[in-house]
Length: 243
Image (cartoon, rainbow, N blue to C red):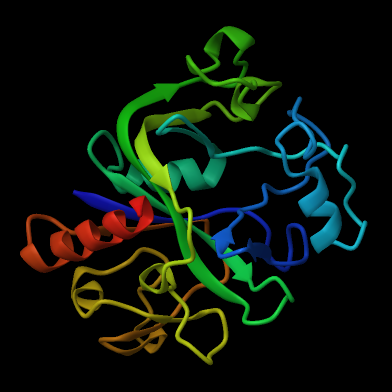
């Protein structure tokens, strides 16, 4: 079994500010885009929030790349290009779990940190190809998924499955070590031994409990196999997301 730490939403490059935590709830803001989208922040129900956190720099009617999409206990997540090739090389497929994380901050913009905000257990991998159409839109989702709009790389792919989105900023879902830079993660002790893609340089592992997370790369993959410790860690994380 593989677990993928999947970076999503606003950061210092895309959006240029962290996603907010509002009244204790993390709100992952999808990145702005100029194409391959029919969804504005307003249509996604995020218009007022994006204007507030960007101080009007990004307006409510700006198009966004709403991906992954969550509705009624199900996720639809698209990937393509080099990031999708990375997932394929590492054997990601049905039965694996994406842990979506992003850069967040408190409502006053302080305490910038990485945290997990949702999970997707893969039930279907749908190859869309370079020229998808509206008919490829996953069933039951209200808005057209961006990976079914326009032209993409040939390996354009959708991952579909059940999961949950966090409704509160649980301390156990925080990746960043308290008081440290966002890229300094507190990690479970088993992760160093299991390995994590994009983190092969041993200098990234300050100890069995601390990791300097890579600033580049969207999908960090670890194969947890059948070992008890990582499976128990994953169970506690999924439970915390569902709370």
